[in-house]
Each structure stands twice: as structure tokens, then as C-alpha cells.
Length: 252
Image 1 (cartoon, rainbow, N blue to C red):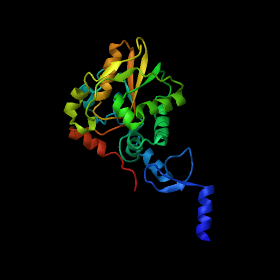
Image 2: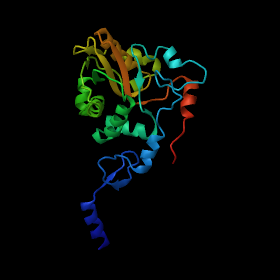
Image 3: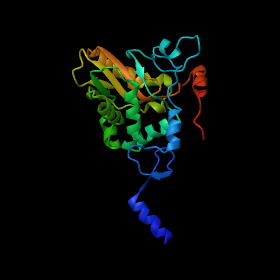
Image 4: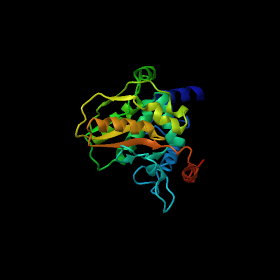
């Protein structure tokens, strides 16, 4: 009898799983995460102590090493709501590799809040190579753009094509990533005089964003800012990694 009652309740109140911990919860279309994971996501916000220009962690009283090393070349300003770790990383991976569109909803909503009060002429998704997009079935950056556009009213402009297949950036050491994407993108729309917001899921070394911004600026864009769902901890820069890891860890 109890089993029949449980089955009946499941039909009326179906359970779905949290997109981070996979624990069953009562269906709530507006909340892809359970309460505990939502609280953990809140703890992963980019801290106020981060660089105001690129959002990288900084040591007090010292200039930002990422900006000083040219990390923001061609990019006028960077925005992101979260550090790439834990729940934020899980959502991005679900969106990027699991093709779970629901995972993009909380990310897009927070990304829109990160640019609140700032005007842009268009949102530009970082493109995928056509074969990879076909295999994956979607471009996660475009899905994020669409969600941000719904929140902000900014139009989405597919201004770039990826014209050359490249190795996955995460498979390469930081020093080889710029070379990997050099010449991989081409302009496909008029951007002269526009203030553009380039959109991607996560920024690590920033090589892809810099190359995209370079192409947009060469096409006459007035400004190119970058909006990502998260900023990954720096690689191959131990003092910055130490600062990043010292941020509050989500509670267990």
C-alpha cells in the first residue's frame, strides 16, 4: 500500500534532481538547485577584493599581475558573478557537456545582474567550430546569450565564426593557448561603432576572449567587454592561486 501511495505521489508531485548534487527534490521549475547547493553557490561569488578590471584575485597593495601581463588586451572590462569551483563549475559542465539547458538559467540570470545598469548594443557569443557545435547539439555561449538577452533586452548578434578547428584549450598549458586560437575566428557581421559584450561560460587564461575581441575591434567595434558565468583560478601563477584557494570554501 505504501509503495502504491508513493508511486501515486510521484505522479502528482514528480521529483527531479538537483543539478549539482543529484539529490531528489520536489519539482520547482524556477530552482534547478536544492536549497543547500543554492547556498553554496552564493558563497562562490567573485569577492570584492578581486581586481575591478579583470576580476582576478589580488594581493593587497600590489598591482594586478593578470592585467600587467596583458590579460585584458583588447578587452575593456570583464564581468562575472562567480568563481569557477564547486556548484558553479558543476552547472557550467552540465550546460557545456551534458546539454542540460536548465543549468544555464541561474547562470544567465546572475550574469545579467553582473552588468546591471550598463548598456551594450549587442551580446556576442563566443562561437564553436561548426563540427563541434553539431556534435554537441548547441553552443553554450549562445544559450547564455539568449538567457541574458531575455533578462536585459539586449539583442544577440552572432558576429563571429570559428573558421579553424583547434585543440581544446583546457588540454593545453597556459603558455600555448594564445597560439592555439590565433587566427581561429573571423567576423561575420557588421560591428563598426558598436559597444559589444562578448559572452562565454568561463574565463581561464582569457586567450579565446582576447582573440575574439581582437577580431571585433579590427572590425571597428567601439568597445568589447567580456561577460562570463565564472572566472577560473589562475594557472601557473602560484601566488595568485594561493589567494584564490583562500576564498571561503562552501560548507559541506
